[in-house]
Image (cartoon, rainbow, N blue to C red; front, top):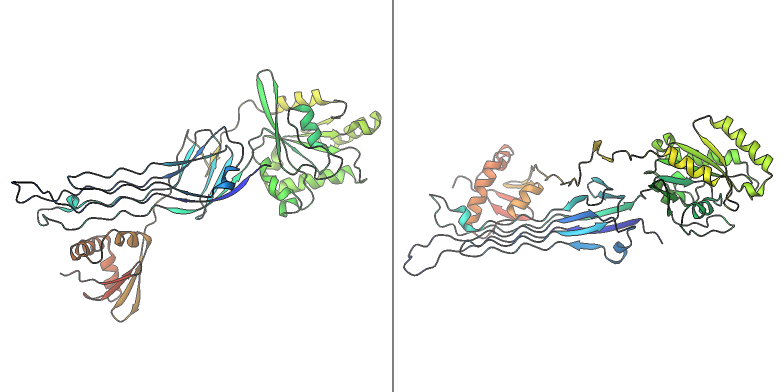
Amino acid sequence: MLYDKARIFVQGGRGGDGSHSFRREAHVPRGGPDGGDGGRGGDVVLRVDDSLRDLQSFKRKAHYKAPRGTHGSGANRHGADGETLEIAIPPGTVVTAEDGAVHDLVEPGQRVVVARGGPPGRGNKRFATATRQAPRFAERGLEGEEGWLELRLKLLADVGLVGLPNAGKSSLLRRLTRADPKVADYPFTTLEPHLGTIERDERQLVLADIPGLIEGASQGAGLGHDFLAHVERTRLLVHVLDLAPLDGSDPVANHAVIEAEIAAHDARLATLPRILALSKADLVPPREAQAAAAAWRERLGEDVVVLVTSSATGLGLDALVGALFERVPVEAPPIEADGEALAEHRTFRPAAKRGFRVERLGEGSYQVIGEGIERLLARYDPDNEEAMAYLEHRLTRIGVIRALEAEGFEAGDEVEIGGIVFELDPGT
């Protein structure tokens, strides 16, 4: 079974805490601060691995957390950074984050950082100045980024075989390649896409048998809603059309149904080159098959190659293979993401969230809301007066105090940040 969807939770490692330490040596009565910094938390990285073919491994494990950074210590010893956690994914995986960011990963070795490790805390050595020679506080490390990711695999195939259920796509793929899809005389025999390869003149093409589509597939009917996405990366479509449908339906109407569903799913697919393979020619008289091919050539024009084929007898298959290699370009088009061509092994890094707002909760009570401000407060111990004094200095430089004063704040009023309430007295 092909697993082409998965949902995983990723979390970057927490940053290590800075050390609150002072130099202690014999004959050194005034040893200064020597607390080292913590280590940065490990990142969570997705890496394209060409040896993988689907997302099956994520059915067994859905939570991934990178190692944390270690704490700093005395004698200016810094903590070690957490190791990067790499998660292997198959080529062709589309990753969608909770904030809507989309990463289209197709090239082997391509990497994307999906959860950055938490920044480390600085040791008290970092806060020593001419006027604060013995700082008795250090920073805490912060939690890494976290969130759910939606993974969707879109097959990397040069040619997509499309058509109504039981049109003969699986038989065609089996005859042209070494693939072994299930073949039977009832609709919806194929319940998942199958891949096969054909080779000629030192070239190789990958063919994908897309499960049967029906009317309304682009809106979720039948199997098409799940598998239409697999034709998005193809460079040519082979529309397999049954010359003698078992249900007596009109081949012209059947052709229109599939073409309409493909265009409704993705307008780009409507512009892809086409080959019309009139299948199961062994079930109709040869004269009737040739007459049908002539009618289709007149209907579709010179841009569409129309071939009469039979997977049972091999009729027209050599001509079909020749047309595939002729019409699929040798050079693949450049892969694009966000409207730009991808650089080799490009790494995507999400931007940090900034900004804050101030709300008045009542008389002498205010709230500051903003992820950056809340993470800043999380770095310091609210019970440490020296740390809170340093925090007030930082809030003044950032502009938080000015924004509070614009709302009527006065020294000594209560301020809530990240669920912690404390008094601010910037004038002291």
